Length: 167
Image (cartoon, rainbow, N blue to C red; front, side, top):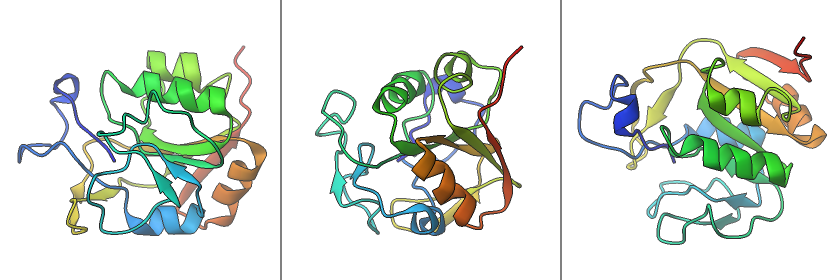
């Protein structure tokens, strides 16, 4: 699930919705996953074998297994990325804003790889219908070698970079 906050008001959320789903082809190509801690309450397809919705507060519940995380976007993204980086077994889908605090604190020195999509993703409405392209480029963040391999094997269009060294 992706939620656009007021901090990201320049995104294409002009219809008043704040819940956007990962296109099924992405999670199908990367899965199976054990847990989706950011799942919508009513989802048109499965992304994992277990779910936390906003009613469960997936940020405070314990995570186990291989995690798929399309966190709420905006001011809360860093909290979700911190939890995933500490869990060390999963893939997140976020905007590729590489200059941000989120990247510097939770990704550059902690992730095993970053996959940058070619072009922009068309997220989906909670009905499963495809929406217009996202307002920014997206990337996948992999924690754990098995998740790097899953991205490499997924045949998604883009470029993967592993264990970057920051000088």
